[in-house]
Image 1: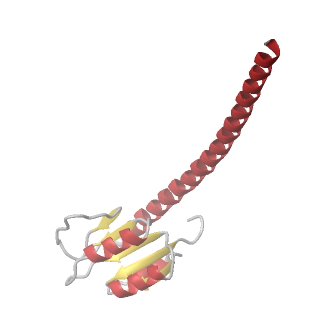
Image 2 (image 1 turned 120 degrees about the vertical axis):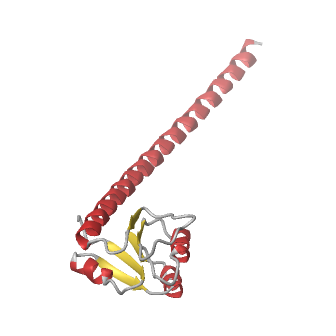
Image 3 (image 1 turned 135 degrees about the vertical axis):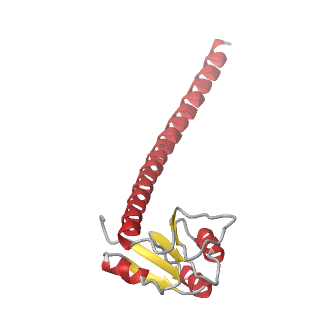
Length: 161
């Protein structure tokens, strides 16, 4: 990991995933309920990744939908059931009882890929802004030249009469 990534853990804490994440060097915030999750986002906070631990008696769809509406961070779903979801909307999904070394490795890869994508996106935005500025300068100069040409033609027409 380049720098300590921030993880927002949502849902069932009985598998101690937040503790495992902290031990692996991640900074972790926890929200147990949708109400806490909504409040966390209302504070204007951001995260590198959201890990949702599905609860046996509650589908994760509400949490996934809330995260998707408030954040561009990738979403990881830790399953506890075989419940089917109509719309997943997650980047990674792990079956129940997946070993921590497996999901930590995949999570690290996801964060690295996301950071690289965001970095490249920032580079492209900066390049685009520079090209737009250069294009605007060329447009202004072209307009100035057109005005000069029009003025000279008008002078020539008036002096030629």
